[in-house]
Amino acid sequence: MSEKVLMKGNEALAEAALRAGCRNFFGYPITPQTELAAYMAKRMPKAGGNYLQAESEVAAINMVYGAAAAGARVMTSSSSPGVSLKSEGISYLIGADLPAVIINVQRGGPGLGGIQPSQADYWMATRATGHGDGHVIVFAPSTVQEMADLVAKAFDLADRYRVPVMILADGLLGQMMEPVVLPDPIDTAEIPAKDWAANGHKGLRPHNTISSLFLVAQQLEDSVLARHDRYQLIKEVEQMAQEEQVEDAEVVVVAYGAAARVCRSAMHKAREEGIRAGLIRPITLWPFPTDSIVRALGPGRAFLSVEFSTGQMVEDVRLAVEGRAPVSFFGHTGGVVPTPDEVLGAIRRAASGERFNELPFKNRPKGGVL
Amino acid sequence: MANLDIMLAGFGGQGILFAGKLAAYAGMLEGREISWLPSYGPEMRGGTANCSVCLSDEPIGSPLVVEPDVLVAMNMPSFDKFADKVKPGGNIIVDSTMADVCCMRRDVGFSRVPATQLAEDNGLKGLANVILIGRLLKLTGFSDLATLDAAIEKSVPPHKADLVGFNKKALRIGHEFVDAEECQ
Image (cartoon, rainbow over all chains, first blue to last red; front, top):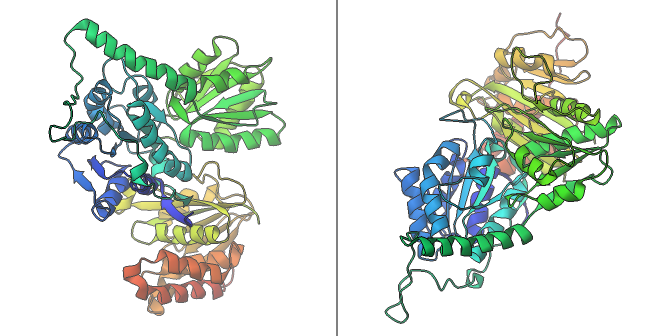
């Protein structure tokens, strides 16, 4: 095992990708993700791989399509507006059943928005990374260590299910430094062969075709349903969440990524004043860890979703809860990071039986509207 | 050891982020939980820059320091912005060459270090940041000199290895600094 090093989240993602056998990276710079591409620019050539700064995000994602179709481990990274640009290409990757890893180090939106940390792309990541009936697997790391650890898993799941995997981070995680023990480099010979890849065969086998075009409706339905069969399996076996002090909790806070860190601080403060708060931290956002939420249901127990958004994941919490418990929401958006004390205030209210959707509206009485 | 939340702030180019990295690195070398979070907005290109560093024995929740135990302010805007946020019982350290200021608060420790001037006088131009880390070390005891020396060796990039000695010297100047009489 390698030693502990101090690294930015963006750099840890890049180094972990190299160690996971990624030898192709195509991207375009955008704050707060740029250190990832810069790291790749420096290291990828030395690792014998291809680094290319494309002329745009659209070009980059289509280069990813090409490399993935040829069977390569390939990654791209961007931040929110750049990921919007990639969305067509991501849909094509999904439609052509191509494995790839896509990083989104989120910033505030919509539009060009800002460059501060945000979680406003939850819907884009989990609902509509592009057009059509498709999904990508979405990981949401919460520490620099987890950013490093999830990369190899992202490549493995992408290959196993032939589904693109998105790592949804944010500017706070991308920019911060924490100690990290980097995973050992994998033996690339152990990556399962991709017998479907269009990578040249000197006429020794039938052609492989990579395409997302099916003009006969029945063929398209068959193709989509075959993929959804895999989605079903993914939902059954790939849900990941971390549960902390949920057993005795009266308020179960649900938060992912950087927001979960703020909530952990708030949870400890709540416990100190006698409020039994717990935390469910989804690590996969798609599939959403519905099983964890359902397991946490219990008499007198309330849920509180806390996000750097106006309330997106809270819908998945409500879908999982199915009306069996009160679900409240607290958030900031646009790059404003909530303080632990603000979250503590929301925990207190949820513990007192209040049910609320709290956003920091100006000129409106505190308490918001439901 | 107690948790320590540090806020370092100043102009872009004063070495705020590097100073924060030294503190974070020292914490890591001592096996503590640490986080380092820079401001990364337009301030990087010439405005005010700041950096949150958390040292703890527990996993770190929010890495964004809102109420610091220690504020290291390298200019006046940073002092104005963060002085009120320091926890009671905490410490404020200012580079008094850059921010000739007295602190009105009586519930925090206050140290005026003419770090930029000291750096110039000792042929250490640009190392006011490390002088202030030396003062921080003395006031809080968050680590020890040997660990900070190791942090310097790890943090100074290889192509600037000749600067290691200057950094260590700056650290000691800050560590040995004694405040003049309390300012009124």
